[in-house]
Structures are given as structure tokens and as C-alpha cells.
Length: 157
Image (cartoon, rainbow, N blue to C red):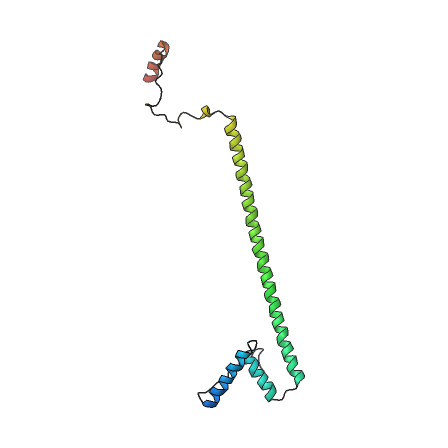
């Protein structure tokens, strides 16, 4: 007996003759009115009827097809569930990471606020603040004679 693989594809050829074109038109019309059926389903039904296969055998074949479709639906649902699980885990991790970073930033801002409120503004080094000479008020300074003598030694040194 002839052994077939699990899935066998056979082709049907319609020639450009009036009989074949008429049959093809009938097939197309029938399939338009039966959107849930395919050309393959129609061919199988025709073969069942033509070969006089008993009704119980036909039903067994249809039940097997439904079972296969249900199995495929179950597999797809499992794949979707797995995808959702991975997606939500990844997004949850990203959200936790962002929340942790926000907490660190909040703590740093709080520390800076405390530091700024505790220390007077005069502790800023004079090197980092430049005041234009024209804007600085002219304050007369008295020169101490001892400092001026020591200053000469410092200049020579």
C-alpha cells in the first residue's frame, strides 16, 4: 500500500476549456458563500461523496481536524501567555529600577538642601567668585609698616 507523510499536498489543474472554467467558477461561487471552508475542504468533501465513504468515517476525520485546530489554539495561547509573562517581568524590573533611581535623587536633593540651609553663603571660596574691579567698592586700606617690610622679603624670596 502507498505510504503518505503526515501532510500531503496534491494539486488540481484547471485547463482553459469551457468545462474546467465552468467548474472553477462554480467552486469560486461556492467558496464565496461558505467563507469558513477552503478549497481543500471542498475537495475532501467531494472525494468523500464520490468514493461513497461511510458517514462515521467522515465525522472521525472532521473531529480530528477540530482537535488539531484546538491544539494549535492551545499552543498559541501558551506562547502568548509566555510572552506576556516575560514582557511584564521586564517592564516590572525597569519600573523598579526607575523608582530606585528616583529615591536616590530625592535623597541627594534632600542632603543638598540641608547643606545649603546649614552653611552661610560666605564659605564659597573667593577663587570661584570673580568680582569686576569696577563694581567692587573702593575701601581705603592702611598699610602696616611691619607688613610692608616683611612683604619686601617675601618678594625677594
